[in-house]
Length: 306
Ligand SMILES: N#Cc1c(N)ncnc1-c1cnn(CCN2CCOCC2)c1
Image (cartoon, rainbow, N blue to C red; front, side, top):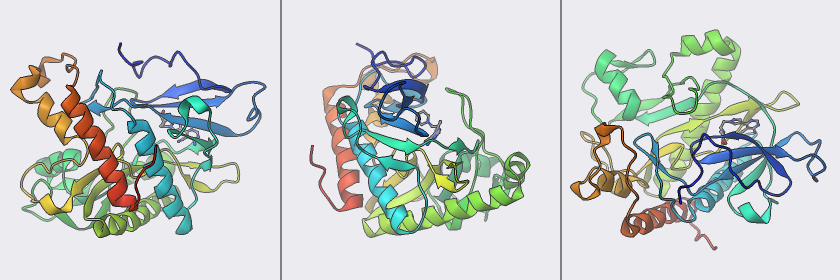
């Protein structure tokens, strides 16, 4: 049975909550009338076990992915809080049916921009660099390759595309035109500060944090607040430091088994066909689940107990 597509609201709502919006692999809910949170300025963010690859949400879920990535995000929110950075999480006392894979968050006035920090060059940043020698208007040295480390991390914002479209990299100047100079500067400072804190933590765990995407919003008091999920394999590129070798696509910590199988002859899938990818074999599902668990344990230094 296929999981709910990210376009359709889920059939089952967590008790006491009604559907607000859906992303590729997560849903957002608001308090149901008469529920214990009714009248509070909060949302419930729920992570599914869905996994996306090559711009497709795959038909095969990864068991416990939602729990593992939610617990990793919560761990990072604690690290940010210890560093004095305001975030949106208010409670993990969530409905039983989404236990461990949901968080109750302050409802924010979201900033309509994706805030990306890059310490390494790959993905859309590499593609732009190969065309122009720059990324979102930031000139980079010549001779950089896929996976090259940048002299210093850069802030490369993107517009928030509609569901299913690609986010578009925008220059800092364009960002200032949409959110104003002051807020653009505050977003850049906060994004680079969070990246720097997280990159140091990752490096100590033998993991390269190549880049990460953050979202921000304003709470009722007007405080700029970190939203969404933070520093998970869905919002960031994590590479095992021991296998880092610029000049080719680096193995993704979490999705490499999926990507390699989907592009292997065994899957019978042609990525350029526009067809939906086939179901994943059990061996790929269990290896990917193990990678998510390994990422959690390497980064937090603790084992996840289910
Ligand atoms: N986080 C947050 C948040 C908040 N704290 N308050 C109000 N709105 C949002 C919000 C609304 N959309 N998005 C984009 C990402 N969503 C993630 C979950 O799945 C759906 C897409 C975030």
